[in-house]
Image (cartoon, rainbow, N blue to C red; front, side, top):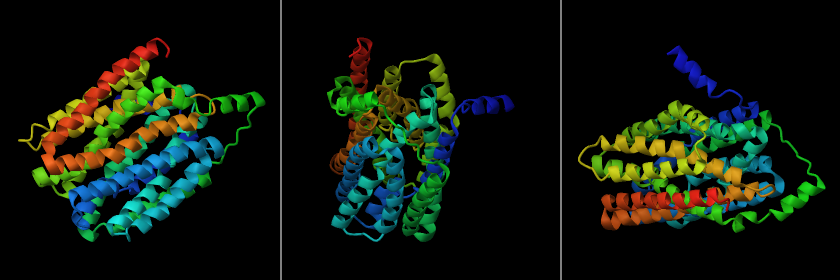
Length: 403
C-alpha cells in the first residue's frame, strides 16, 4: 500500500508552485459549484418548466459559454491571462448570487447568457497560463492536476448539494457558488502575482502575423469538429442523464449525487497515474483522442440495456475513462498546435467547441427525449462519438504528412 501511495505521489513531482496554487484555487471554486449538475432538475422540478423549455434555457447556457470562450481568447491575447482570470471569477461570483432571484423564462435566458459570457472567459486564460507556469514537458500533467482539482471539488459538490436541496432547497446553492467564486479569485490575487512579459520587436511581429492563424489551420479545424462531437456526448452527463436517473429508475438527488461521485473519485484516483503512464509510452495525442471517442460511444450504447439499474454505474465508469483519456489530450493537442501570439485564439476555439456543444446538445437532447424517448437519444449520442472516431483517423493521417 505504501509503495502504491509513493508511486501515486511521484506522478505530481516537478510541477511549479504556481500550478499547485492554481489547483487549490480551482478546488475551492469547483467545490462550491454545486448547482450546475442539478440545473436541469432545478428548472424542471423547482421552477416547473417543461423539458423543451428547460432545454431552451440550457441552450443559452451554451450560447453564453460560446461568447465567453471567444471573448476570453481575444482578451487573453490582448491584456493577458491574469487580468482575464481575475475579473471573470469575481463577476461570475456576483452573477451566481443574482441568478437565484430570476425565475421567469425570458429572465433566465438572458441571465444565464450574461453569466456564462462572463464565466467562460476564464477557461482560455487558464489554459494559456499553463505555458507561463509550467515547463513544456509538464504541461499535460499540470493540466491533469487542475482537472483533478476540478473533479475533486465536483465529486463532493453533488453529494453536499443533495443534502442541501433536501434540507433547504436550491437557493443556498447559488449563494455558495457565488461566494466560493469570489473567495477563490481573491486568494488567487493574494498568492499569485501577475507576470509581465516584455516582447522583442521580432516577437511582436511574429505575434501580429499569427493573430488569425487559427482560422487558416485546416488540421486544427478538423480537430475542432472532433472536440465538438466528443463534447456533444459528454454534456449529456450533466443535462439528460440526471433526469434519466429519476424518470427511468426513480433515483433521488442524493442517489444521483453518489453516482456522480464515482466520476470524480475515479478521476482523483486514476487520472494522474494514467496520464503519467501514457506520457511514458509516448502514445500520439491523436490516437488517445480516438480511443476516448470509442469509449464515449460504448458508454451511451450501454444505456440501451435499461433492465438493470447497475448499467448507470457502468455508464459513468466508461464515461469517466473516456473523459480521462480524451480531455487532457485534446487540450494538449490544442496548446501544442498554437502559434506564438495566438495562444489565446487557439485555446478559445478549442473551448468554443465545448461551448457550441453545450448550446445545441441540451436542446437537441431534450427535444429527442420529449418526442422519441431516452433510448433514441442514447443511440444518437453514441453516433456523435462514432463520427468523432472516423474524423480522428483523418486527423492522424494529416498529422503524419505535416498538414
